[in-house]
Picture 1 (cartoon, rainbow, N blue to C red):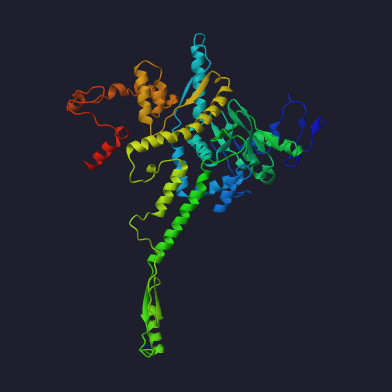
Picture 2 (cartoon, helix red, strand yellow):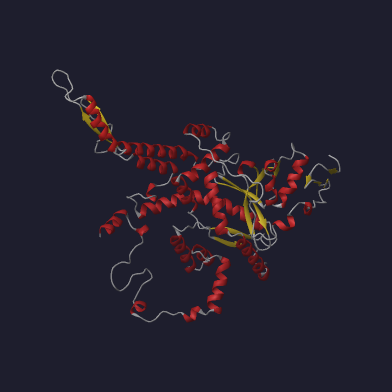
Length: 507
C-alpha cells in the first residue's frame, strides 16, 4: 500500500488517508456531520422522506424449527428471526420475556475503587464522584437499559454503540446479523462489524457515529481485507445472556418455539371441536310400506324437504333419506377429561423454566410465587452483571472515573421490601449502607443529596410536617410492630405458610 489511498470516496469526492497513524483522519470531510446530530437529545434513526427498508418476518413451520435447533451455529440468523416473529405473534412468549426483563429495577450504587483513603483528597474525590453521577444520569439507565435486557432475553446478544455528548449518552442498537464477537476486553465483549451492511443500506450511514463512516471508507478501499473491523471500545460493546457461548447467539428461550406451535395447534383443534359440537342436523325420513313402495310421492317429499332446508340457519343442516340415521361421536365423555389447551399452556411455562403459578393459575399462593420469582431472578441478574461490566469499563476509561465503580443491586419490584430491610438493618449497626438502602427504595445517589437539600434546607419539610398528637401516634408500639391492642402483628403474604394463607382466604 502506498503513502495514500485514493479509492475511498464520499459524496463522489476522493478521501485521502495517510499511512502515518499519528496524523489521524479528518472526519469533517464526511457529509452531514455538522448538522445531523447537533444535540443527542434528538437521535435520528431513519429518514422517512428518503429511501429506507422495512423489516420482514417469516413464519417457519414446526419442522423448520426442529431443523434449526439441531444446528444452532449454522442456523443462527434463522433462529433469531423465528424468535422475533413469535415475540410479536405469541402473547404467552412475549409475556415470559417481559416477566424476566422486569425482575430487576436496575438500582445502582457508585462506590470507591482502588482508592487509598489515607491519601485521597476529599475535594478531588467529591468532584470526580459528582462527574460519575452526572455521567450515569446522562445514560438514562432506567429507560435505556431495560431495552438491552429485553433484547438479550429474546436474541441472546445485544450489540450497541454510544453517542456521547456533554450532557447526554444515547445507546444505539446495531444490526445483530452484521455483528459478531471476536475479543473480550475488561470483561466486556467487543463488537466486530461487517461493513458490507452499508453496501445495500448506505442511506443509514449518516445515522451512525462518525467511526462507522471512517471505517466504511477503509472497507471501500480494501473490500476483502477490511470487511470485518472491530469497533472502538469502550463506546461499542456486546452484552450476552449466554456469556459462556461467545461464538454465536442462541436465544435462551428458543426451545419454547415448538411448545408455542403446539399451543396454537391445540387451539385450532378446540375451535374445530366447538364448531362441530354446535352443528345440528334435521333428518326427514321418507317411509316405505311392506311392499317397498314409497309412502309419499318422492317429488312431493323433495318439495317439502327443499322448503325446510331453505329456512334453516347455516349451523343446521338437513337431509332426506329412506334409511335410519344414527349419531357417531368422537367426543370424550370420561370424567377425568382435561383441557388440552390448558395443558399445552402448562407445558409451555414448564419448558420456559418458570412456574405457571405466575400466570393466572388458580392454585397460586404467595409463598409459591415468592420462591419461584427468586429462582427466576438469577437469569436476569446474569444479564445485569454484563451491563455492569459495560458501564464500569466506560466509566473507568474516563479520567474522572478511574477510582470509582458501579454496582447494580440484586433488587426488583418483587423483593424491594426484603432487600431494603437488610440494608436498613445494616445501617442500624453502623455499616455504610445508606446509599444502598436509598437505591433499593428507588432513590438514586444523584437524587439522594439533592432531595435531602431540597426538603430540609430549601422547603423545610422536616420542621413543617409533624404528626398530630392522637391515640394513634401515642399508642405503645414495639420495634416489631406489636401494639397494646394484643395479638401478633399481621404478616405479609410472602411470610405466610401455604396452609395459613388458605385459612385466611376462607376467613
